[in-house]
Image 1 (tube, rainbow, N blue to C red):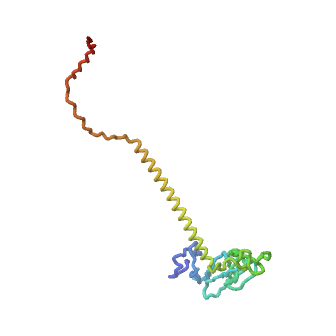
Image 2: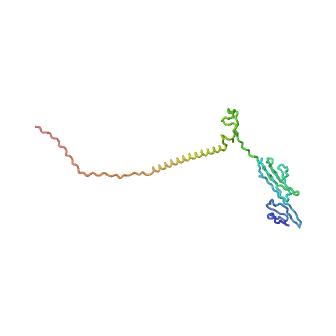
Image 3: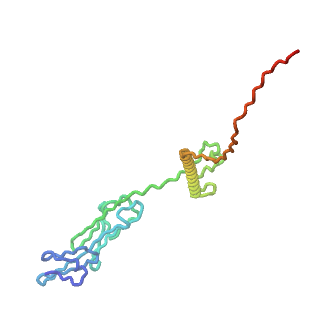
Length: 255
């Protein structure tokens, strides 16, 4: 007969398969417990154990960090415990494994094993261990024994020979120098932009003046015509009288 589930939350996710099988979908940790199936009035009990494994913070770890592997077993009365098998085959008889710190040799498949009534169930988690990123080294200015100023603790440039990158320079921190350099770069860029804009504006102005002159040269020329007053006409005179030609001189009579 079909198992009686009652008001258990698992009832909504359980379906009968065949005459004696019960299938539970979307199994949750709260589904553990004892299930009773009656056949011809004879009860048969079955214990459902839920096993879940986890790796914190994740299954991909960095060498030198800390991590925790948990083999959680949910069963009636918490009477069933799990244990771990390391990648090298050795056993860790505890539900939790503390990796402090994580080592490259711990990379591989970790197996959580649960035993109940002579049966074993196992679930695996793959651990990947990555090497830490190399730390950037800060170059230091070493003392030059061949320098002429090495005897008085000064290098050839006149600064302290034991000065290292990151130390205050002229009493100012390195980030202040970075800010000063960035501000200087911004000023230079602004100056370049101003010069470029000025030259471009000047070229446009010259081009405009040339176009204006060309337009003026193509326009027809207009001349001013002034109304000048004509002079008064002279009165008409008659024909001039010609002077009579002079008479020829006659010789004087002599006695």
